[in-house]
Length: 250
Image (cartoon, rainbow, N blue to C red; front, side):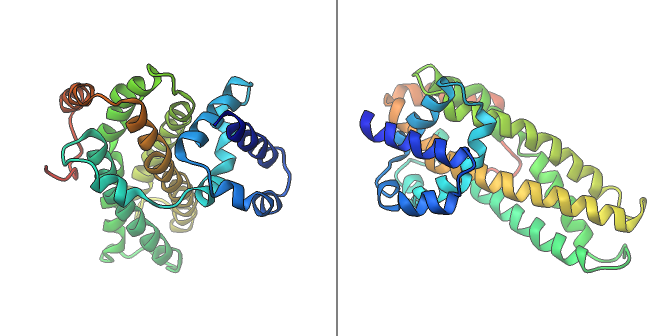
């Protein structure tokens, strides 16, 4: 594993150095297909230990997506309902649905020349903004329960990146709430531009964030936290924090 991780680390460094990502990924296509989530996690951690900032790793998003297949459904189905990770993945599914609504509503608004108070599309923006803000218990359960448990077992590279992205997303979700309350008050063209920029950031960042948690962080957590009693203790801590208004009942 050490040799394979070193080879992957070199590829990731090349991708981050400014070399043409398409060329690098094409050259390493067969090799990247053989990399597991655990090996990718270890490689990211090695890069951070070597002095690379967590934000530098965010430019590797497209590489991550091509290296990992979408096995999240199988991963979730192998977990019992009520398991900490089962709940987090289920919440991700609902959040992704909100993002689809946000993208569709934004596209519709960008074609409009005037604000129409009777158009339901503006209510959709407000609804999505409130529920994305309402996802805070999801992030708190990760930051206060899951991440420390993973880090205490020697895996901290992915969690550092996730915390950084949580911070960015909190700011933009608050801005989306502000925009949702500004329709009919501020200049419509300016609000449209703000909405478009905020929407594109949230879509790009949160979709990729969820992909990395589902396909990298959560499998890594399951790999290092192997005692069922430990998961039961983590579940109790999650219960104390609470859940989102849209969390599915178990």
